[in-house]
Image (cartoon, rainbow, N blue to C red):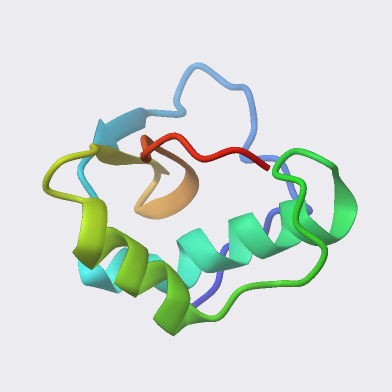
Length: 89
């Protein structure tokens, strides 16, 4: 199930946002969010969407040293953040 990033999750007092470390099952949602940003914004300077395998490999290669987090609301991943090694563009 991919994240639906076109719809806001709401702003009511009943919304509960949890921040936690990701698990493998979160990556389809992470990729959907990242690829939406790639196609609709200049947030990451990419031009083409990435594959699920690419994102899982990044997490596998760097997740122990550079932390990753997901934001979850009502059981759905609605955002993520990650640290990564510095590289020039």
